[in-house]
Length: 395
Image 1 (cartoon, rainbow, N blue to C red):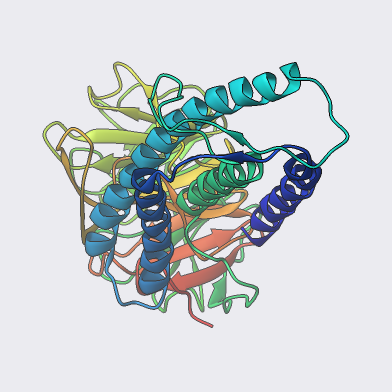
Image 2 (cartoon, rainbow, N blue to C red):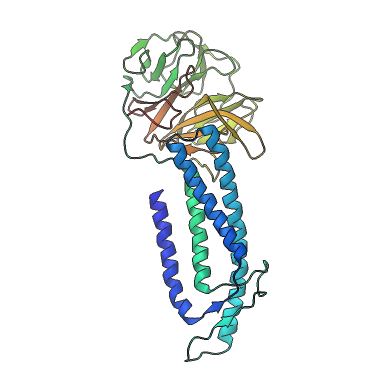
């Protein structure tokens, strides 16, 4: 975020420097337009409100349920005001160009600079007066700065920081890829890799082998069974298996949905209808018709995932709640593990926010007894734990 803002500030400085000689050659005066000043102040206030919201959420002053509705409201307000300001500035530019053309048409003189007054009624389509060239250029640069700052804030609103979280455990498997809590036994954590499955009952500190009958070695993810109790496993060949005894025996899952190509993991978001969200090697996909059709769920400008390499996705039935543009109410959170860290969505994948855990992550697990308790695993099998839905991590 810092690098992006520094780049924009340097660009604004360059524009101001170029504008200086132009201001010395032609001075254009106009009557003040207080309405535009008010609009600009409101737009800047909305961007500042977004920064304050991010800060208050980071320090724990706002819950996700409080944060997301406010974030959406201020973001829409900032963008709407910026659009109006752009229209006003376009009208000023047209009037200013006419004024400069009229000045040049009068010939070049060696005497002092002659002020050219643009009447208040001279305007473009918006009917607003022109302003001095330097002020117009700086105002336009300020609008660009506000726009870029708002987008940067909305795409990634959590500073990942430089302090690394503590490793709370390590999975002793080759190429570990799968992680899940056993829904039948409280606190029992299961992990899968190329050489089998293991279980831990102390949060990942120690592990014991699980004799899994019928489970292929190519397991790539574990997740709660869709539409039933138990546990499901997704294998490298695309098959889906199910276990109702904590991973000891496995059988083909009946009625499993048809998954999109490159599927890496599956999560079910309850609702009417329920939504299936799949992490694939080519981005996120979502389906509200049990896998009949799939649509992209990578987010939009105000929360776009920065990568398509998505390894695992889990749903956490937290108390978080948000309302979408069409009035739909969303409950709980989605988390996705990627090669660029952890991201969360409060609206079924329509927008994503970076959480404070970076790095190359391959698997996630949510404790069904404590939905805000989250464990993440990286490609080396190292485990990290959060007790507040991924906002902070044990250090």
